[in-house]
Length: 143
Image (cartoon, rainbow, N blue to C red; front, side, top):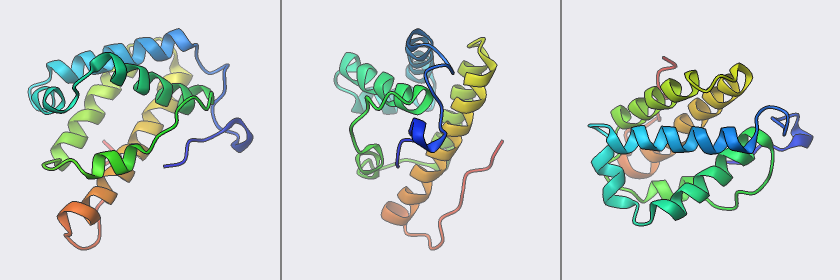
């Protein structure tokens, strides 16, 4: 997944502050960790939450602010995880949208929700091809 840049007309520093990105990541992953479906799954795989948090902040800062701080291959990392389901991706999106709805920054909410849906669809479709092999990958429902 390619991170949009300012040259692409993507999000920029004026969309939100770094503090807003940090708050989004903190609130969202607190929800994820407490969630009945996702919590145990994440806890079993993330060994160092502080390091993971820093990586997630860099990722979302790159997506929402165009900072280019994130360097990694999130899709390939997730393709190796056994047991992901459509329900998990859909729950992840629900929790993400709940969190962005509380952020108080409507342009950031719209951009983050759009990016999360694109990302979840991209991950899920690639995961289906790589791990499940059900034929043509199906996108996640928009709502």
